[in-house]
Image 1 (cartoon, helix red, strand yellow):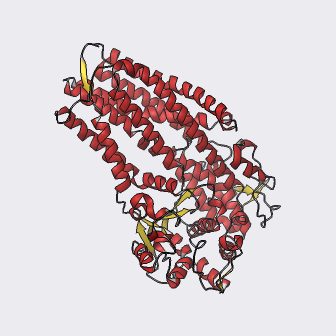
Image 2 (cartoon, one colour):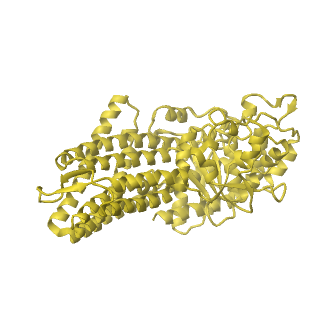
Image 3 (cartoon, one colour):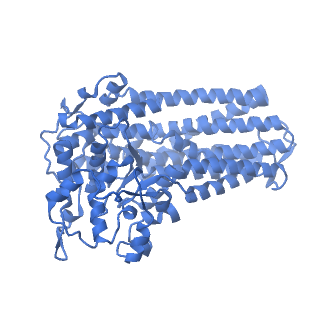
Length: 593
């Protein structure tokens, strides 16, 4: 629920804390029709209107709005037997980042498929003469420089239009839980029942989608959701927690737009200009990507520090922070007492839950994101303008009668989309994650270093482009593309197998190694935090320093006991949850390997 209770205008008149804890820790519904969900499309309509905080949204989503408006939002939810995904997020995170990430998560694949089909339609209309050429120019890959071809970018334009229409308007029917929709915001009775049933909502959810941002672990209700889901699914055979940093969406759309702009320029500029433009634009593109990915990897280091130094006591709640346990003469439950009471009931103690989060969760989230910071599917979605541009090129050659060259050109495009550019992204992401680039510097120096590293990546892309050109020139229109696809596929396989091996063989992930060897998770060790004060309310100064300015991750050490501290056996109270986490590690390793 994140912060669903923290901004409420009408306090819930419940004063018996023990009764509330008893209801919430049972993970049972207060009534048979209490379990509610909504379709993923509902909160994302109008570019995520329902995801906006009250001060940014329309009157209809404001918590102080009328009963009719609140009922209208509540009617978007419906009774169900199971929930597909529970959205766990902080309302303090930038809403536009969450919305873009969710749009790509739920609509991205459909947008890529429909965009590519639309690009093929644009190509067919160009070949049929329905759409006119945009420019006439000689081919950059043809030895005959006297023959001019009618180039156009209709496939790319059709693809872009269909992609964004689908991304914003696709009606995903996957069921999700969002507190502002599934919990009534003005009816006191329904609101109280909804809050008491948060644990039940989590236990009846197949997965929990964590939209992480730096404020996530500082919100007490986010911590509660994580604890409730781990406890409710402790005996499950699959690990259902999915993590997506809110920067994944903006990163994907940024890469997508860079590709779209660059390849449209390549399509519409004369061949003589293209030969100069491509190296220059690629250098600029990679410099920008280095800069963006450096910031993204820094946010992942913050994520790692958040979990490595996790303490329930550091999470804040509205009632304690604002000293508002009595509002308008009506007693309010203390969120901290409620949440910590449930955690103790589920895990035996607060320390046990801290152990679980510190020792395993970041490992799983890091594997889900991949060695190269973004899942491979995100690389494919971001690179769809590449294949659209090659469809445009293929259409030009097909119309001129060179059908074999057209097919070979499209084959080159598929190889670049599936193999070459994901490998380039992997290289850029790996360079951006190095401690050399993560070190805090002045903006000017950072820009210079990004430009230099971008130049190195540009040399690699020029080599790749030269290889595709030479394959066509010396091996022909059929054998050339096939050889290029095979070679690029081998390189991509080596790159991503290296990434999987790097995950699987990391010495800092003992539980993963045990699972891969078939050993029991009962021997998993956890940090020794016996000396850690559970009442500590301030963040470790080194964690704070990392969040503020880019301290190297390997220098961050928890003085009160971190991941590299002396170890001990995991408390027996955590055995079911430990098994779940171990299954999750094994599952994601198998998927990536």
